[in-house]
Image 1 (cartoon, rainbow, N blue to C red):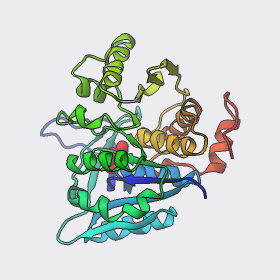
Image 2: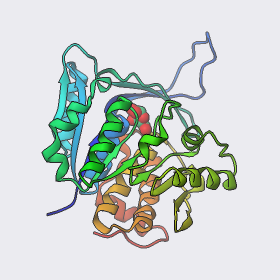
Image 3: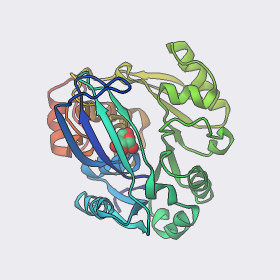
Image 4: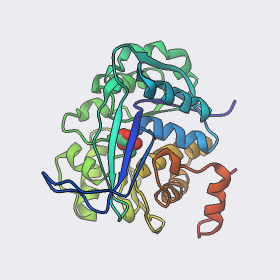
Length: 314
Ligand code: RIB
């Protein structure tokens, strides 16, 4: 049987405005371009893995509006099993107004909508399907009680879990995360999780080790153009980023997580999966949009053939 990835998480409709600069308070300015597309950290990670050829199960909630119908259709188009994506009567779907500056950097607002209704009972309702999965991906755009429940569920059933603690929240209880297999924060999420500074390489290492001390097996700290740090009891390894000219960084972190999951469930080689994931994230920042920027396996191979680092496994 081919490996299967589950996402217990969010979906949003991304309303992306490309700006020449951000407006000041009380100021109206014109922006040259707008695009609407499928987003949400959970959905993005699932779609990235599915584009590469993974079998993906999604557990989530949409509103009873046209965005919700489009989101479910989008999952089906991506080949994702959406039987456990429920419609919440009377709720709007999640939406994310996003502003992308000429540098490719973004600012994002999220309105959770139906995502706020994903409950522990929804995890239980998907038990049989979740038990058939090799890795469960979690993020923080659904209620924390559901995230904690999914971690405990996975531990109880011997399933591996990756938590991407994004968007950063000060409310996260580190004690409830010790059973995650992989914790993948960025620099600011790491700082918020540990209460430690993370401005320098040394500070990042110290903070990441604090997570190991809290019982987490593997910490993957993403550092944008500085690459990432893989931190385990066995030591620390730096994996450099692939330099590209950024067009739109929206969803690059999700491209990284989804592609890591895809390669990891096949090889169970963490460093190798990270090697491919930094490359997959790099392609995504050279393209506009969120899920729109996620390439399939053939296009990814083409990208890899043009840079150093070898060819990804088929
Ligand atoms: O990580 C990028 C995502 O964050 C966007 O797709 C947006 O929907 C928000 O969830």
